[in-house]
Image (cartoon, rainbow, N blue to C red; front, side):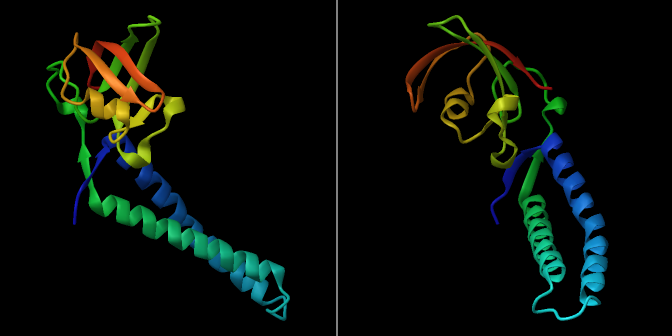
Amino acid sequence: MEKVPMTARGEQQLRQELDRLLKLRPQISIAIAEARELGDLKENAEYHAAREEQGICEAQIRDIEYKLSVAQVIDVTQMENSGKIIFGSTVTLIDCDTEEEKTYQIVGEDEANIKSGRISVSSPIARGLIGKMEGDEVVISTPGGERDFEIDRVEYI
């Protein structure tokens, strides 16, 4: 089974969601029991809604448990700051054309959220940055064309 990289924060968020779902299980069972008491199950919308909610909840639990079982948690706060870009590091880039500054954290697939500044390790930008050093200038192929960036800062936070 191939391990999937995940940040410590990503693991914590998954565990919190799993706890929430596990606490929801008994509530769904109670809702199913209450709906069952209402009578004919064929035309009982409350029963069908509760069963559907149960199915979704169980699928989410299985999904999270699987993700946690294949996760290789990498805690970059324990790394020595060498200035090298690795999984989990936070990188501040300066666009050489526009002088615009952008900050990204390189995270696992499930943690990526571009609006929060977290990019997937398999994204074109992250692939172009991994292994580079603070102060390097890099040309990254993106779907919008090639972009030229200077690596301003590399942090392990």
